[in-house]
Length: 106
Image 1 (cartoon, helix red, strand yellow):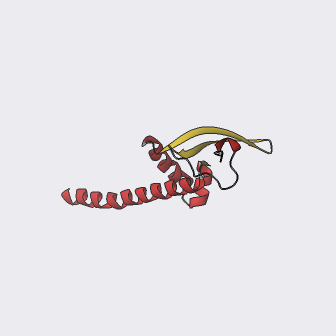
Image 2 (cartoon, helix red, strand yellow):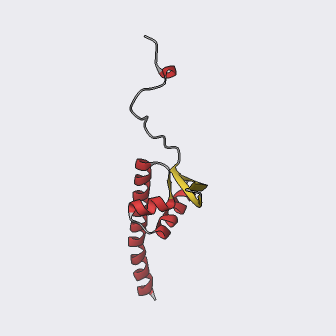
């Protein structure tokens, strides 16, 4: 019986490492690409949709990302899904001209 316990505890460590690696990959992708549907994240990262949804649920529970239900229409066809974004993350300002209100008078 003790051999079974040690065997199962050894097999769970690689699973935890793999789980953490997937979570980090998804977070990295989301920081680079911003708000995304779960389907878009799965396709872009090459991770199965079921696994992505599991990782996103864990990230949402730990308050690292925010989830919002969404309904989109593309060519009149209704598509429901969940959009995810990194919590508290503001992407850097895009290059180019800024509004005059932000410019300081010289």
